[in-house]
View 1: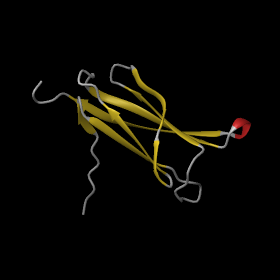
View 2: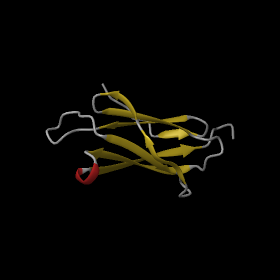
View 3: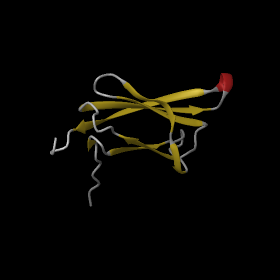
Length: 106
């Protein structure tokens, strides 16, 4: 069995982004906060520190609706996981990318 992870999406479609949060013991855990920012291929920030949606313990989703006129190319995203609050807060960044393409009908 093979698992295929889709990272190429056409304009006008939805790009699902899933994050898994693990503690130092390697177990899924819930952070204090988890947010996502998305930057398009032109360098424009399309999403800024948006909250991700809880799915199950340590699993969070964000669904980005790609505009039909979005620039094609590689888009970047950064997920920030925050543990704790105030002066004791620790932030852990992680990032990834996906590719936006045009429709074959364009």
